[in-house]
Image (cartoon, rainbow, N blue to C red; front, side, top):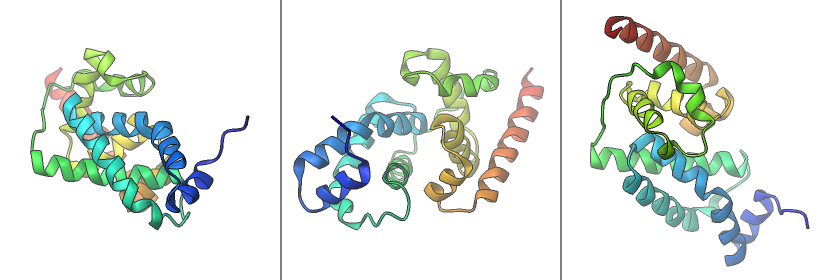
Length: 179
């Protein structure tokens, strides 16, 4: 049995097919949760955010036009919901970024919560200025290309590259000062 593509399921879900909607949620919930966890750094906040994304998706799915892949479009919803949640909660935790070099290694782990060092690493990344943080988390945490990240963040691909570059410079300077 072949798995139905997201775009087909989204069309069915937009017409009220609950099974199609449920399949989309099941398929993408893990990614939504991981994105929320990387930005918030807290399990309960990530669960709340993921639930909010699912609720928003139920109303927004009728507006999906297919300009981007469904996964990218959903990431945009998850990203904006997460940022909105963070603005309300104002609970950013800053830690020593001495482990920032291992950022790419943390991106391949099944769940950031399974690794305490990974949690500290992502907390250090969350301490970056918002635009740099978002670019780093999308590219390295969510394994998105610069082009996909640009769509999700609503900016150009060059802007994403610049934010990544600036984040690396800032982290390098900070690591030299700490180390």
